[in-house]
View 1 (cartoon, helix red, strand yellow):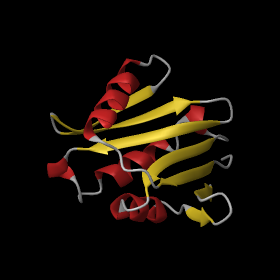
View 2 (tube, one colour):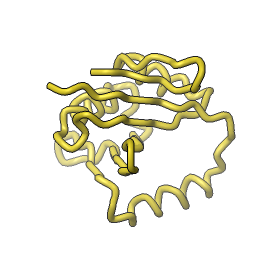
View 3 (cartoon, helix red, strand yellow):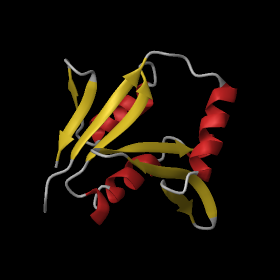
View 4 (cartoon, one colour):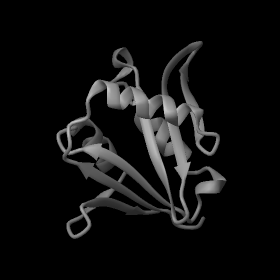
Length: 124
């Protein structure tokens, strides 16, 4: 299997709820994104998305509050890293610096912090 280099950028800016809603709605309407519903039985647990750029894919994941801390994000991302279109590509996920749950998640997925670029990186 080819290696995939993954990155996680930590943001310092606080995101307002309306900014997030605008970004989220735009993301859903973008035909170039790859969207995957995360399901538990018939219930939607969250959404995993990849937005392609020239040299990388931007990863976004949202889990409904009542389903957090149940490993849904971990399993969804781990499984998605095997998708054929991601093989050999860099993956970047943007996370607020105080979002400790997300930072822990990406570390659990074996991402490591590159001090110079402030990105978490992983080569599979």
